Image (cartoon, rainbow, N blue to C red; front, side, top):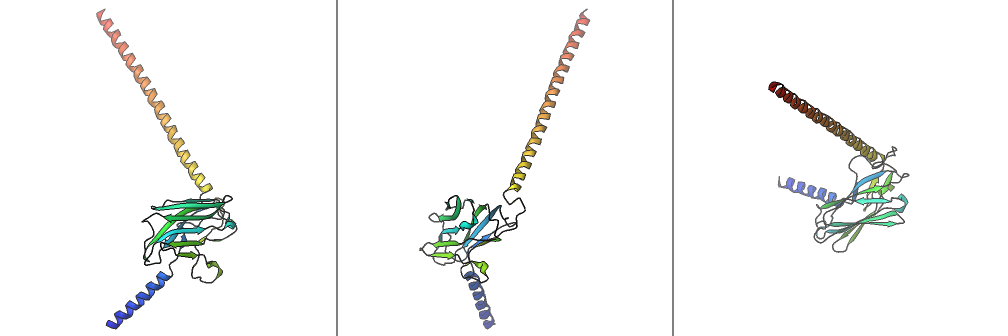
Amino acid sequence: MRGAVVTAAATTSLLLAGGLASAHVTANVYGDPPEQGGYGAVALRVPNEEQEVGTTKVEVTLPAEYGITTARTKPVAGWTAEVSKDDDVVTAVTWTAEDGHEIAAGTASYEEFELVLGSLPEDVDTMVLPAAQTYSDGTVVNWDEDPTTGDEPERPAPVVELAASSGDGHGGAGAAEEDTGSAGDTDSGDSADETARWLGGVGLALGALGFGLGVGATLRARKAGRS
């Protein structure tokens, strides 16, 4: 039994070590894949692979040939984001940790950095986004090896798979249609309010008329009684 326990523990340690060694920076898409020529939301997941030092800076490179002109970042508590451009083309996005907010030391720690990119290239199926991870001791780990070449690289770059364009890329015409729908709902509500106010005004006018007729009838009746 003691031997079985030792063997199980050793196996578990090897599995954990393998899982930790394979941890790397990835680009995740939650929901439908972004479309070629459209806009897409990407979550860059950055694990901390060091036991003694934390991650203080993350930089993702957007190859110029993709021609991406817009990059919007979602705020991350304790981190600042900077978008770099060259002739209106986004070349990189860099996140830097403020004091005390780095990704903590230890292989179980990670952070996600979300951004929206567009318009996405129309002539590629997979975007390769090299990333650089800087630790608090100054060490820089580059995740820049192309994983689409067939070999399994040691430091693979994050990748984003693109879907074929449907004519209304994510964040494009679809969002405009949603806005139009919202505007239509608002117009319907305004019309209903105007009708209610009109009916209310008519009711008040009729009420006032009825009150006037009633007072007139009462005065005539009293006059007739005195006569």
